[in-house]
Length: 287
Image 1 (cartoon, rainbow, N blue to C red):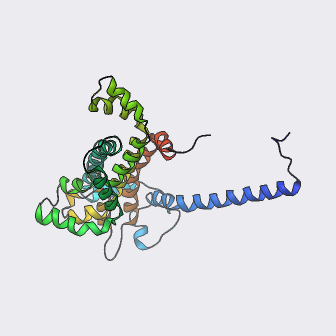
Image 2: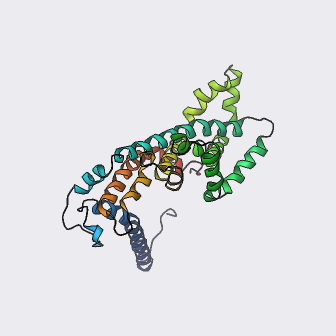
């Protein structure tokens, strides 16, 4: 039958060799990717002073929770660092999911004066490197608004990002306009259309937006480092630098803090993994 192809021994050998090479490459990529995570976790179970003496090893001499205890007792603000990161990441995530999705829907399905020009400006803003805007943004926050060392200073610059607006707009553009037109003929207002029709159809893209925004905001270091002078307002990523000094570094406690800071990201990703994987394939051709 034409549906089945008979492979010769040489072709089977080539196919087997190709599969083995692909498996080896994927294994090496996995090792390179997972090794930093392994080293972070395994180092966190070392004694607080083991790595401080530059005696780095893939396996600690002894497994202990002293580094975790050291991390939480090192500063009175250790718990506050985690709380700050959680507050900032949560508020920014909710703000982006709500406002970026509404803006994306407006650009995709509504027609208003200047919509194309405004969207073009958003695309231009996406092309500007993040570091370029930090100096004028710092001057605005510290010298003009004078809100340094506050939650608004940490949250305001990323309340709504151009990338999330663009992501939402591209997804909403793929929704059939006939559904919205039918809802209008039934007497639905725009808020009802968004709440009853658009949002239920957009759970996948909103989940992806929430995951990416939360992870990005939780891991950010540069901006909190700029606007936070007091230790009490630092996020967990900035707080970890307090374990490094000119002459030594409390390496194991730093890795313990990094492991703790990574837990929310793992929990969030695996809890929403289904939506994230579906979001990766949004727009793919099915056949």
